[in-house]
Amino acid sequence: MSDQISKQVDRDVAVYTIRWSALRKAEKYDIIKTVPSMSGIFELYFQDEKKKLNLFLFSKVWYGGLKHQLRKFTDVELEKDEKRRYILDHFDCYYRYALTNSYNDMCDILYFFSRTYLPGSPAPAHSGRYADIIVHEVSKDKLVTI
Image (cartoon, rainbow, N blue to C red; front, side):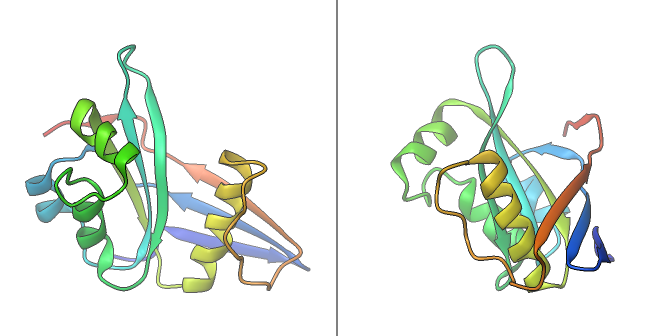
């Protein structure tokens, strides 16, 4: 499977386009069957009582691959963070991912997400290659049910 993240650079501005996988319910056997053991980024959501999806975790994966990390972060018995453990135990959770083989690109995208989703919080380091980073997201509209 090829990269699902592309980049265009204009002078010192990087514009990334992320082509997300379909949103899938976080169930361990489905993750084992469908998620590749490759590097990339992922997002985790929980569905609240009003059926709204709420982002609660995004991360990059370099070593170990997406399959391993998604399994780890979606298993209530393996999760060490109390807030995330509560979410996993009480709500339906969903994930999506995008593959890429560029660690520096993942750093730039996570930096952008941190600034966008968590303004005022310390952002992870970006690659330092660009003065500005822009991210466009292409999402598959439907939820994949299994």
